[in-house]
Image (cartoon, rainbow, N blue to C red):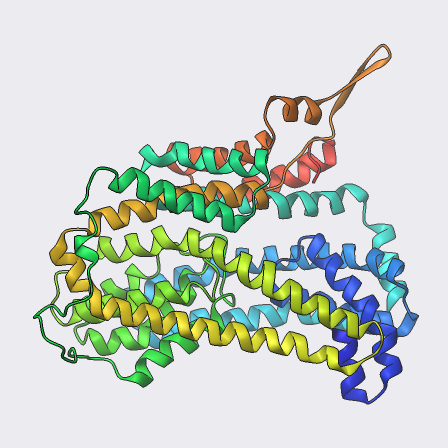
Length: 499
């Protein structure tokens, strides 16, 4: 795709031919190496493109370049997300001061400056010195360090999953996490199938034998029995503003400590100022949205639209507790992340990018249309979901409250969330060991033995180790992060861990 863009911009189809297929291989290699944040894929691609042009790289060489660049991208991403936690704490102080503008700076300006400081020197040096410099760097860098970065990329997601389990908080549903984990490990079912199983399981647990359970979800009639336009405090411009701020900054301030929380708070902050003129109410509202949050940005718009409607209703006097808003967010973020990742990145992106790659490898500039089409499709999808969430929330929240069904909805969301966290962690958290012992003429490999007992025991242990530290030992997220980083690097050095 990058090669096609270069060919289109320069008018040189040969450039597209040289770089098209090869850079597509570089891109795939970066994904395989763990560069799962779009901005860092772009970062590594911007390094790879000049090298590819300089060397006339073949697909085989491109893959060899892709892997270390992917590792470099993971390192840069991990560093960025670690330092971003500082801005979250600055935003906490800004919330206490009801300073909406400072919250916005913490979510956008400071992370942008940090990203430039981290990325630009590396890009400049590597592009200036070219492929020989990359080769020299790789020759100097010990193999165990590269392995350590790979292990780190596979182990660090355990922190996010453990924190989400802790935030959901309903320990009686913890076995569902284990069920979701091993269901994926044993049956290799896709994320969408896991989401369907989780939703059906939640409905079965919560509503079995309760024939009137859904009465509170009957939206056919208006609350007063009349068709009328509900009162609104927010204009269409306000609603669109929340959407645009979220969709453009969702990953910019992402941190290991609270993931996308800062982006959520900064997206809502200007509207919260309008809804809550009183500083004390505004402070509570901003703090409410600075709690841990992590989902797929496009499908997460369904949550944000609904929550925006809830905030509007709360500001107009409806008895909506803070716990209800938090419960909706934490309960739905897991399932929607699984659905969104599967549909957007597992299906739509895969199809469109594969089509684009087929054009790029022949130097056809038509290939540039496909990544643009993906961006347009997902943007429209996100706006639709945001509007749908806002409309449903505005029309139904009082009905749900009056029907007494909200506790069941929160419990259902918790069940699906716990189940999906297990299913997703089975695919994302990756830890293995190369340890082996030889007895006479027989070699016993520890990983093979563990897999014979149950597949995925080490990734599951990593998640529960972090969860145990947070819940029982009261470790901070930062401390857990440091422990995982040290365990990855030291474990790779000692030959205990591999990816």
